[in-house]
Length: 537
Image 1 (cartoon, helix red, strand yellow):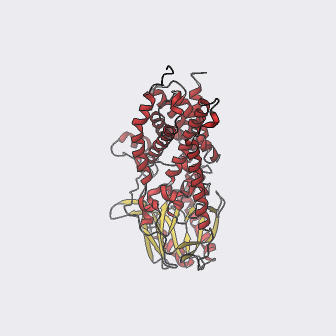
Image 2 (cartoon, helix red, strand yellow):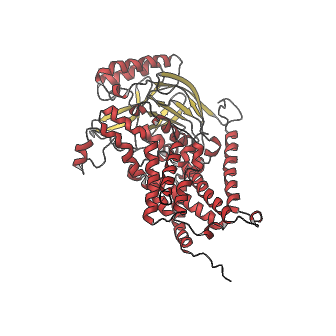
Image 3 (cartoon, one colour):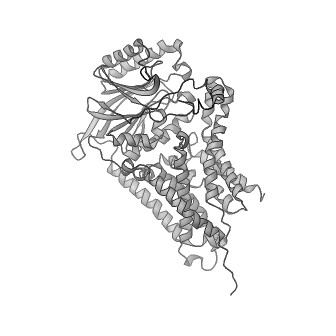
């Protein structure tokens, strides 16, 4: 048992982490999820390689559990080997917890746990290292930063308000810090049990609780200062724009979405729902990502259909489409805003592409890779180069469009807000993953774009979570997931919104954590190497 318990603890940490996210949604477990792994690292005889492997086991367990829905692609493409995607992805993503486990070291020296300053430094350094690796995971090799520790708290409105300063990584730091501090404090209490137990002040515990209280208190005050429903005509509030939005959720199965045989049915569904939405006289009508089976410029009939819908509805129409640029012979995953009854078109080209979904990395460099999986990604999209903001006419409003997974990437929304965006709109299609937890996890990651930038976010999806997210992170569900429907809502935003610290400075917290974790490494190793003081006089 002495040899196996560290491995069981590593698996337990992975399971606890997985349970924090949809479909299980036991987010409160995030405060103790890393504790078993930390205990395995600190209270067993571990070499550098063993620490790496323990962290890898935790990572593989967590990521294969939380991204199990990727296996749904096997049924969509009738390609059973794709069921192994969650494991392959977990083998890579698990390297980040493995590196973290290596960095935080092994502490079996009893005297390590009885100094408040040292304990705080260890907890802060370890949390900074976790944040640094989580940040790197979000951009390395195009990045896949879903389900960081902080994302588990997306429903805790009071705590997530600090994201306007630090981004979601500030919450990841807080959770990792509390996990490390929990082990350090309990171990210190055990080490100091005896006659003088009550006489000692343990500052690490007091300061840790004070930090949590401060974050919670700030969040409550921020929520109270920003009522969720503040009328645009309220003289006490800053001047606001109010826009009436109609969002369509066609709920078209992915197997039919681009099928030529199903095209008439798809267009009929869009026309019918658009007619119902137009009856409510919206200012803005939303269709989801890749709404029409063919791109608007691929043939005259599709462009004519869209223009007719925009003209008949009498409002602006924003939707996702494939844009084929004949001049450059490239294709883009784009968003198109039709105004002036369909006579004016504004385009935003998706900047952050999904590898293996929208392009095949190293297609030309590794011909074997192209032969093996090139059929699943027959053509590559080109990435857009401009964080373009689209202008709505009536009311005058600057809109930025986040296509597909772009609402899970902090820098895209931030750059658009810096360019003057007043309203964030996500057009997406989670139908690739059937009725799985992908849609809920996608929304959980998207919530932070609204809080980080203090801008309302509207999500229009084909099958998933069509909803709005307030600047404080409160989700208002518009249509039941995986059902066909239409929703009309009033959304207001300040006419002259201010920029948050995160909007101005981006991932400054990540850079701070990176520097802090590097500076803490020599300290951690020195603490490990210091022998216990002699008890002899």
